[in-house]
Amino acid sequence: MRSVSLAARALALALVTTLFALLVYHFAAAKTASAADLRLAVIWPSGKHAVLSTRALRGRPVVLNFWASWCGPCRREAHVLRSAAEQARGNVVFIGVDVHDATGDARSFLRRHGITYTVVRGNDAAISAYRVEGLPETIYLDARGHVLARTVGEVTARALTANLARF
Image 1 (cartoon, rainbow, N blue to C red):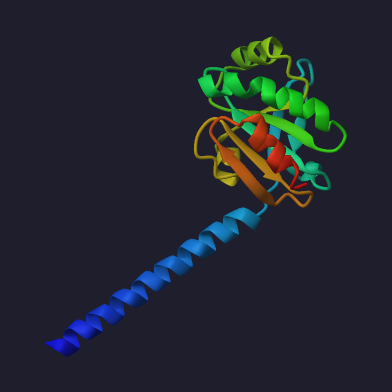
Image 2: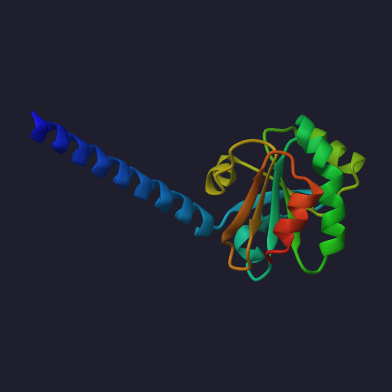
């Protein structure tokens, strides 16, 4: 009886250790993986009929902000992102990724909030590639396109400043 209990404990310990190792590997891979090349339609500034390739952004640090016009926290963080993008112009590329939204609603939102950086139409491939959990979500990419950090939920000026300092 005692040997069965000892064997069960050893098996449970081995299982927990294996699961922990898989969890650590998952987070390490998610943090350093670079997303595949995505081609996303530019919706802002208006009149630009272009496609943005995420591969073309390599060589510069990038802030990707996933948002939608109907999202309350997205509305609250818009001025923080606009200000940071203006201050970091020339050093960091800011890209808005509008998801699950009508283009007209998105453009009205961008106009109302004075957004000057490029915004693209997001899709399921972009959401999946960057493992977006919800809106808003801000992802910080190094010059090689690797994820350095992310802010899940509304980004604050403090969080944005701290993550921009990583570049």
